[in-house]
Length: 211
Image (cartoon, rainbow, N blue to C red; front, side, top):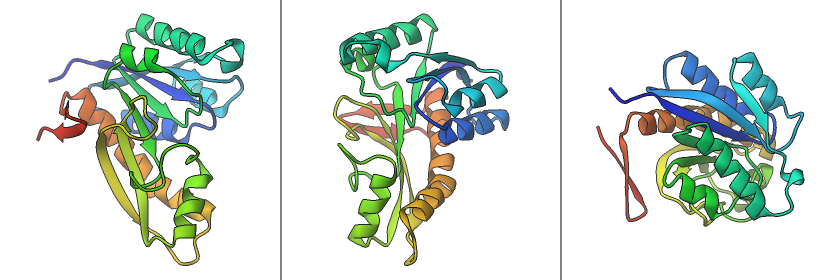
């Protein structure tokens, strides 16, 4: 049995993926993982209310209070290190961070991206932009990817992917919702569980999952 692992979830908005993780933890689906800290990059976001409702400590580390990405990244890394965090999950965290965070938590930062990487990913592909691009291309399937975060945007080792059908009458909003419900909210908790049960190893930018 793996030892309990403390999880920090970083948020910038409504926190729908945070809620999926909170719900999964309540159902006992995060294995040895426990969400102990939620950090928001700005105050007043609904994700902080979700944390409070679940009895999880929420903190605001506002990007605007720091004069550089480096200063902000150091504060963030220091805060999570002091809290004894084992795993960091980016859940709609839209603030740029630098290598100080990656070095403090090597192969311990997860992100969910609303497309099947390497499609529709990288700089500028976030939120509805991803789904607008997928529909403009006329793809028949899209989906979500959970990957380990590295300094290069959306280029880290892939842990899990799930495909979702694209309907002919989809709008970016309907596709976004379907991908959240059918893919993101399922594979993000699953990837967290795998990490917390020590079932993930990374070799040469590839993830191997132990049975």
